[in-house]
Length: 574
Image (cartoon, helix red, strand yellow):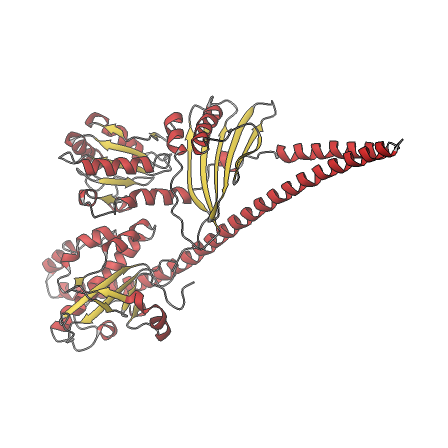
């Protein structure tokens, strides 16, 4: 199932503390960027519309305060291409005193085909960050990571806990041994998130140890680790640590593993979700171009009326007057035609952007409602589990087995808070064979609901593992019966979230999507699946093959998990 496509492909917005020269700097950087893109065009940044090529139009606007001082500028490039219309908008606003300001860079894509486009971050964002040195609360945004030595660790902790910080802060710790691949990938990530996150580098082991001592064990960053800290870090609350995702050195040092790219993707997704600062969202630019064109039309019409009112003396003079009047009116018609065409383009893009925003809003509302249903189901299951636990605890206490109760409470295993952690713990599930592609599963970690999905995914795998063990011990039913009438000590999965088959039409049309790898290298059809979310745009699923009691060659005695990832296409997919 796919999420409605957003026309806003990328957004970076940041605050500038010293804005005296903000507008001039933004114009200079934007001009240099445009000249590099259009080396053969005469780039002009004065207010108005400027043609940069057959399919590229530049619009520049300015806003002035009551005293006549410029306080905002907008530079917008539109590139009309066959496959899509691309629009890059740079907006800068400064306060009247010039002591603060804000800048945003939006990249929009309006596809003309069904093709999916890969959008890259505009290069001018990095140049703007380098020139303006913006800030996010106490943190400074930069194009290179800020070096943190052991004596600067407390300043870093202040940055992470700063209530004014609104964007992520990425903290990386250098590995114990210098590794060019680690350095290259981390540097690439830092360049990619410039303007969207602040970045810090724990310089050596002394800094790593000092940071762990200052922030606590749960929020630590070990050698070779990269951690993305969201706003509102609470070092005193151990449960808060799971919000701030960790990627260990193995991911960064494996040449075949591209999971490291998800750090930047996650930051970019958060930047898109963040609303524009009020300073940027409320600025209004007068349409001086339209006013200029209206004035030109008035003057031309006045000239035409004067020509029409003067009586012709001779036939030749009359012909000249008619030709002059026709030329003026033709010019007016051509100008009006251009304006109408441009207004039509603008209205079409505005409508497409509005439709995209509306679809995104509807998807968010639907997902929220589905999450509420999922949470209610989870709460119901939790309540039942607690009631059963209380009864068992009471029985043990009545039998004088209080020590066993205490030991059981201390040895309760934790639930993974990410799919990366889940994958690292698969060896705990001794009765399962997992052949699912980890790259697909790990991409779920980029979604805001990933912690919930990972917890439910682990519950699903534990249930399958429990079933496989019970089947080998003599349980005669299948997994569905295991969940409806579980044997003693079983760990069933909520029956409403178990599907043992797909519909006939789905398999007929989309059965090829349900062929998954089994030991030995073959691909086998798997229809049975567990739902990690009942509805929604992603609604992850776990597909498995039950051959614990089967005789299928090569897979007899196995329970194989062939897929963990987003909802596959079915007849209900939008």
